[in-house]
Length: 325
Image (cartoon, rainbow, N blue to C red; front, side, top):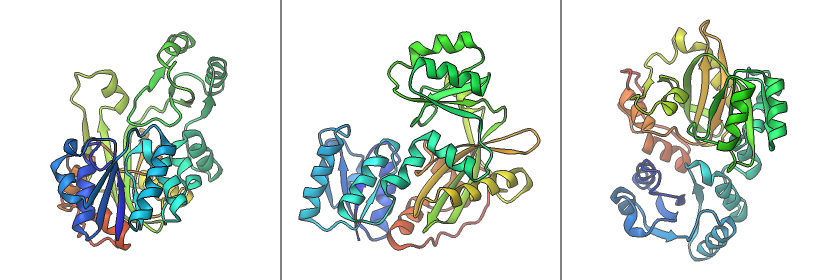
């Protein structure tokens, strides 16, 4: 099994996933924009070959290099766990005729409006929302959605360039901060706890799931950098506190199947326990959340994920032993 791993050394946790692939018996070929000497040691020792590209921003050049590489060595899978490269990874699979998510299947995980439209059609509770490409469309969207609202990039991740807006005046003031963003989503502000539903899936079926919550909310933490924000993985993923969010998570995965791989869904838990969808990505959570999942169950999800994508099985012994933070 020869696996092409995109960006094997960045972000930092990618080195752990690269190690996981090697440990389950894959021959791992890395493709990244870092010089070989800049790769973390864990990634370097796990790679059989490394190909450096000039820039991840030049997708066509990257695809050309992958085609050249495929002429030199057999590639069985293309794996990518970093948000900005999800679409290029799908294009590589289509170019080489490999299994995994296609561009069409990947788009709903990157375009937050397509994502929510699919879930709306399935009857899953999402925030009221609107797409906007211009200042005028932002104003129109805000009028439809109502205040308070959230405005963020259509393909954003990690609460970057995300703002809570409480009035028309605040909306006008935020436009200057969004000039570098071509398209945004405007959505109803949901007053609830920020929670996650994380999975490893095999052929569209959830093989492992985790529920966590952020303390305080992610947006509050980003706006107040003095706060030492926590992510707390819960032991009682089948308990009453998690029940509605878990049900929503499984329902979302039926509407937006990821095939085989990691997913990270965010949802809001209202005071009455109601779950409201936030967003979902076809990748793991960042900021060491995978480590927290490992600590909670004394498992290794880096090799668990690798086993799933390479061999279609998940043999980690999952015992919900601890809460972890």
